[in-house]
Length: 290
Image (cartoon, rainbow, N blue to C red):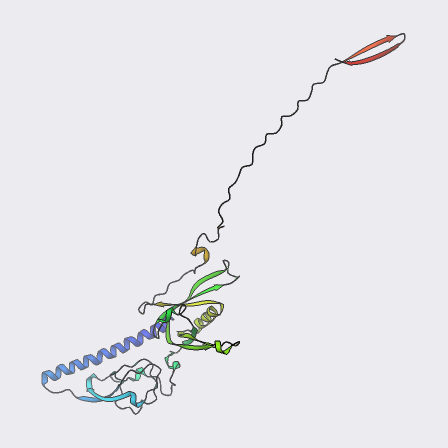
């Protein structure tokens, strides 16, 4: 949920609380004054709810009753009669015995249904879930969730990444959707759905996350509105040794050392002698090795 929407809801809650506090204070002061003077406080008619009227419901006369309360305890924007209330759409739950206030109603002409629960500038988008992705059915209207997606893609360096894409998103409705099997109509099934309140920019991110990967909802505490920035989880972060070779190291066997044969010594040349033989006028030489 954006900071603007969260501030708007907080402002509405503060104003409603202030109005209720003022009404109770006036009522108590009237009772104290009446007890001190001994006179009953003046009463006035006001319209209250007979039973719980859920948000998004168009009011019918049988949902209301006119009663009397001390005049000083009745808020300024309350209704004295039911003439202008029929068909008006409730923008938040009204509980049994609660005074109907104009601030708790949509403008005249507004249609009943889910659209009455969507503040200006916000959008409602429905997500298909199951027992795993939808927190086992524990997600109810009014809860706040985070949205996590796991994407597998060749463009991701490690093949897959898990990342929180939205935080503190309000759930405004739950239901079911029929998933039709085009091959066999008998195999069609009902799929649980969750409708969340998001901004237009968040609609784009959520649509991409649900079409490109596996989406999960993470239920969070109602009073926790903090948001944390994360880098996402990858396989190497989850299991640091995931990218290492899991096979056991091979034993390295040293090759036997083969000694080279000793070089054959080169024999020394034997000394040579030359003998000359004189015969008349001729000379002949003879060579001999010792």
